Image (cartoon, rainbow, N blue to C red; front, side, top):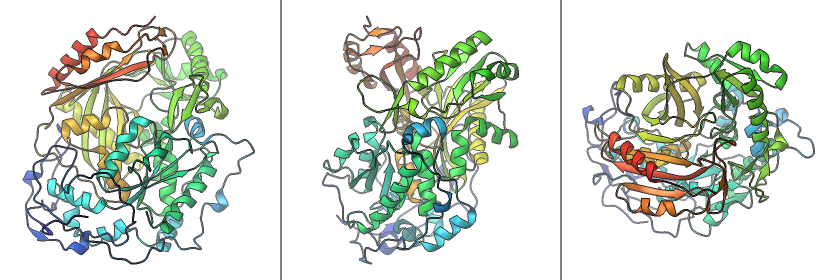
Length: 613
C-alpha cells in the first residue's frame, strides 16, 4: 500500500468534556462549538496487526477520499505493512457452543430459512444467550484485530466529531474482514462496492446461486461462502457459525471483525451470530421485539410511549372480537414482514373479513430469493413462502396524518444522527409509498417530536449501536410509531442521506459492525446537498407494460439523479383495483431546496404516462 507523509492528527476535534445538547432541527450537533487540540498518534495505534492477504485488484480511492464532497483533510496516517503475529484463529479449537443444549429439532422437510423469518421470526433460531453465557464466550475469545487497534487509541479521539475524526474511523476499518449474511437483491451491489473502497475484506454468505457469487471474480469481495438457504433457520445458523469460525484459517481473510446484513429478514440471525461469536451487534432480544410489532407496542406502553389500540389475529374466527377491541378504521399487517407486504386498511366488518382472506392469499403467493421478497412470477426462481405459513396478523387502530421516515445512527447507547424524511400519502388501501422528500418540510417542533419518539423507542427495545430506519406518522394526536427496522433503510435511503446531509449510512453500518464508535459529521447547520425528492411509479391499472419509453426524456432533464425501471417492458403489472400495485420505476431528483425538489418531482410525475394495455 502507498504511504502517507506523516502520522499526526492535526487539528482533530477534541472529545467533549460533556456532550453538547443536540440540535433538534438538524441531524447532528455542530462540531465547530467544541474545543480543538493537537495530539500525536503513533503509527502503531492505527496499525492492524492481524491482516488477511486479500486485496482488491480494482483501483481504490486515495486515502482521505469519501463518497461525499468534502474539503481536503489535514489528517494523514502512515500506512505500514502489518506485523506478522501468526494466523491462528481467535476461536479456541475446543470452544463449546452454549446454544447446543437449546437447539430445536427440525423435522424432515423443514421450512426455508427466509420464509421462516418472514412468517415466524425468529423461528427455529436459538434463543438469546443469558448474560452469563455471553460473558463466558467473550472471556474465551481473543479480541478482534479491530478491537486491539481501538484499545490503543485515546478515547477522546474516538469520541471526536469532524472530517479528520471520520477519516480516523475509516483508517481503523481499513483491512477489517466483515461477513455479510445474505446479499439481498442485485440493487444492493453499491454496499459491497463501498465496502471495497473502504478497504474492507468482504465475505458474503448466501445461497449458491446468488448473483453476488460473481463479485469474487470481479475483485469486489474476498470470499463467497455458499450455504443452502432452503434449510431451516437453525441449520443455516449453525453452518454459518462454523463457516465464520473457519475464516481464521484462511490467510486471505483471517478472523472476522464483524457480521452484518442489509436485509430485513436476516437481522435476527445476524444478531445471534454476533452474540455466539463474541462480535459487536444488536441484542437478539431487541431485534425480536422490533420484528414483532405487537411485542414492540407492548414495550412502548411499558415505557410510557404512545401506542395505538391493537390485537393479534391468528384465525378468521377471531375477526369479530378483534373488530370489537380495535374499532374502525383499522389496519391489518403481519406481525413480521417488510415492504408493506400484507398491509391493508379496513373500514368495516365486511371489509375486514374479505381483506383478511386476501392478505393470507397474497402472502402465500410470495417467493423469497437472495433475501428479497417478491411476488411469484411463475419463473420457478425463489422458494414459495406458503411452505412456512404460520401467519399471525396484527389489527391496529388506523393512524391519520403524514408518514415520515427517521434514519438514525446510534453509538454507545446514544443517538449521533437523526434525519427526518417526509413520505407522501400512501396508496391506500395497500399503503404503497408514493413519494419522499429530505429534508422534511414539517415544522422543526414536529420533527423533534418524531425524532424523540423514534430514539426513545429504540432505547426501550434495548438497542445500543447501529443504523436504524424508523417509520412514524405525525397524527392529529401527536407522533406515533409504525415500525422499527434494525438496519439501514432500503431503496433510495442511502443515496438520499448521502446527497442531502453528506452522511454515508453504509459506512456508519460498517463502523458499528466492527465496533468502531460512530460520530457522523455535518459541517454546518444547513444540509450541504440541498434537497432530494424521489418517487416510485405505481401501476395505475392492471395489464401489460408496453414499453419503458417514458423514462428516456426524464433522464435528459437537469436535476434528475436517475430514472430507473423496476420491471421490464412486456411485464404484467397490477393496479390498485386488483391487488397490491406493481412498482414500475423510480425517479430521484435533487434541487437546492426541499420545496423546489418536491415541485420538480410533481412536475415530472404529471408527465409520466406508462403505456399499460
